[in-house]
Image (cartoon, rainbow, N blue to C red; front, side):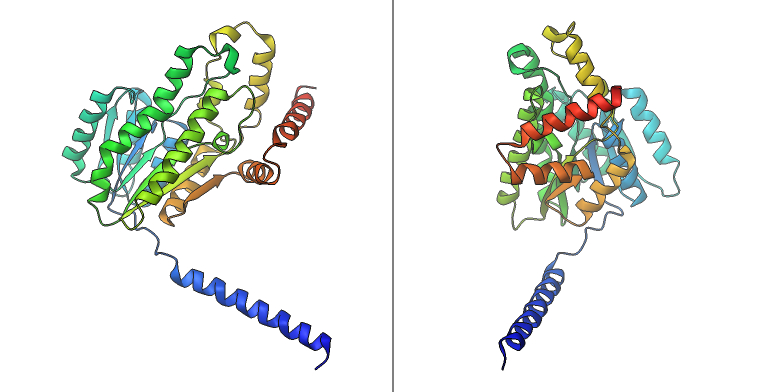
Length: 311
């Protein structure tokens, strides 16, 4: 047999093996999670990605325990979802998730209404602009209290309920800044990398249980978290910080409802990690390709785009 025929035969064999491998993976993939009739707890539910998640779950027939500190928007969302065609059980819980005692009371209230919990979306979060030297210890701790400590506390409270079910999910909203760490976002990146690590370690510990774990890394989603994020007090009168913040807002393009649909679909399919948006996918790839050099590339792209948008 000629060398060319041998190579052609090898190529066909490789294609066949790849096809067989893909088919085997699909055959062994777990069945999607059935969401109809289940109960999900969502923190930060009154706006942004949390609201998008709630709407997407409601379309799947999932009962909801909506948690937020802002009562007005929370009740408005509940009224909207109760008006849908399905008779969903929807409860609202106005809670500051940094209050441990209030979290216990909220969990008990959720159980009293819904009797069981199948999914927990740890979604509530805040941002804070400022470099490390000008972010005070109190400001840093405030952010960690919401973005990390509350996540750990709520996971501890609800995990026994999730483990008692037959098919459950823990979902953590990290961030694009849980994959990359740009200057000026030291507190926020610290919290979101920590959420990613916490979730990843938990996934290993929960292997073989009914609980799947999904970490979400949203890119530029058009939410209030960036627009309303406070600057460190030391930067209040810094014009450069204000300009950079305004420029950053221009990168927030994805509709939060679309983000919610992407996240719920990924949870239903039991995906371990979800990159929401093309920017998240591209920057994740850049970080993997150049884990040390990516900040330089990011800065150049940001400055060029900012100059173009403000010209």
